[in-house]
Length: 457
Image 1 (spheres, rainbow, N blue to C red):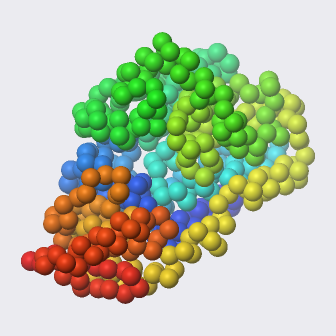
Image 2: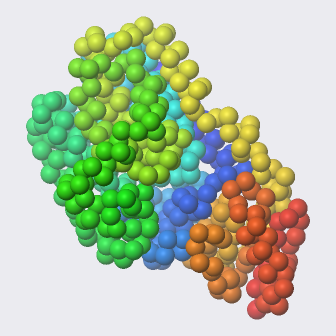
Image 3: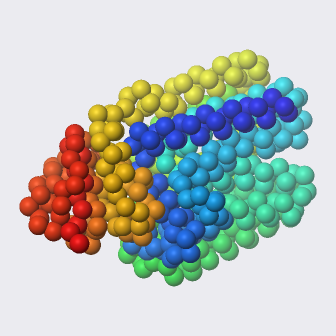
């Protein structure tokens, strides 16, 4: 157990430092780090958390009420680093319930420690940590602990775990409901299974038909949530109706080369430990995997992003189940570790620190100097990757070629850097030229094509 604790601590420091370095190199994004940082900051200040990016209350995003207790950390000191801290702690802590589940299943201590290492080396853990911040990272250790408490008969702790999962993201209620089906019919933990199934369905209805519509209109929900499934319809209810009445709509989406590649990516780091009879825990992963398969968006079919996190706990439980019953393809601990290391080296995005993340170095100093000139609380219009460094204010936004042009007169500062790889350079340069001709805007900083304009008082 001591070894696992040290592994968890080391993992935390690696994840935490990686996310900080990425952020400081201006590789964080307005979506989603800027969204969550602004929302949590506004909550901590006792202000309505209306996202100036989304145009509606932060609870309308995913009904993620977990942001409210997280905001207590911002009362100590408001910093985006708290989000990195929470995320790194959550993802690292998943190793502990993984170890306990392994021991509870009858695996020897050394093998249980190996499985905890397999969890930490699973590429999605590192990659999801790098991809800004998302509250569902907290659901990973919570789901693993929920399975453990169900098996130990600790119903109260089980309820607390699934309550925590509900607070991370509304759609995770489907994962909890699916876990309930597995617990009832396959793991024979009927009480906890019934609680999970009923509460999962109930929270899904409350969140999607109550909380989210209350804080945002239907068009906002469509733009934020359903655009990835637009072929199914223009509303949540229509999408469900089409899934039921026109199953042919989804057949072409499910049976595709892209989805096959996605499933191979998802399973390859642990395929050595998944047997046919040991696959039953994957019932809990079905909603997550199915949503990714049905999506039109490529980001949901890759281990580089966070969209598969809800499947990870059940992959680990499936591996443990196969090992406990002697059905795993590979049982040698050294080979398991080597396999996991190869999977991490092949699929984890640590290499970005030597390539993609260095592309902003030429304007790094100028960007830092310009940011230091922006006064607190003032409204800001800035390029996409500068945004997360300025989100502690009510109004902030970024240039977006896919959206109607914004009224720049409502911003006190406009900070533009056209040289980041993801920026629309033509759009940014056009804005710069327009602002230079605007008598209401004063150019107060210019260096290395980083421009800071201040609105005349």
